[in-house]
Image (cartoon, rainbow, N blue to C red; front, side, top):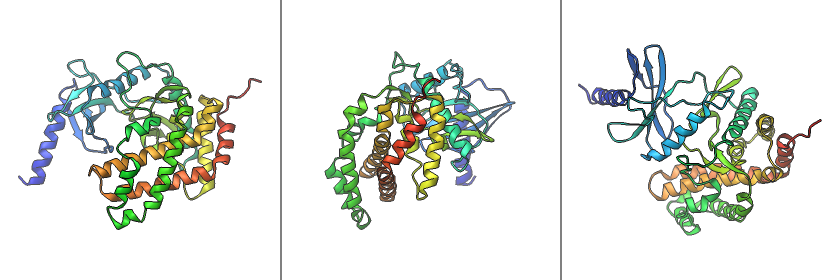
Length: 349
């Protein structure tokens, strides 16, 4: 047997062992189709049923998975217009299984659909409506016994990335000529970080609740023009409500200003249809968008410092975050007018 075939045979046995933790009908077939960045997934075909098997690669914390599964179980009864993953109970009654190497795993019912695209206006507006609908549903679930958030809110980025102080960031810039060329951009982002830190007291006073925290097009499913599913609830936490919106909006800036603004209008109109925001939430949305991007930039700085990523990854994030934050800053007034128009509660006629 060749090394490649032996490795494939070992992988098949690995996933078969995990699938064996669940009461699945025969015949059983496990196929490699697609995986996310944080997990390994396999498609499981069991007689006439289809499932998604997930192995959690980035942690082995059962408490985090219990939060995800607890929220997903509650959302099954929320009357949503789209589907969310439904965890399947194993032979032992738990929705959390353990793989042969000790990693945690879970099985979910399959949701049919394809990835939506921002090039389709119906998908953009539909994802906004789905995000607003989910935010409204999450409002009913407070931090209670068994569902205490495992992740800090985005505005706690200074505590989350405490190691990434100015000295460390400048030290990273001295690692190579390519990084040294970006020292000015790093200094500008650090200045924006300082400004974001000064806003935290205002941010903390905004309405808080559970949020998904990563509603992007790659974490959604569509059929035709309709959004039919939202995925990847692994990083749900309690944060300011408006951050759910800010995370998505921060992905829209691009070189074509009118296209980016149009997509923001569509998304916000969809969201506002389901859940208007308070005036102070709207006023801080541009800052929350920048705060989100700064958090991402610091995350990758720490990964570089710890030797987890090559420098090209942080270089790319410096470029991307600098562009997005500058784009938002230069269009702040235009964005605020857009947000007020789409997200303000409409007076009853």
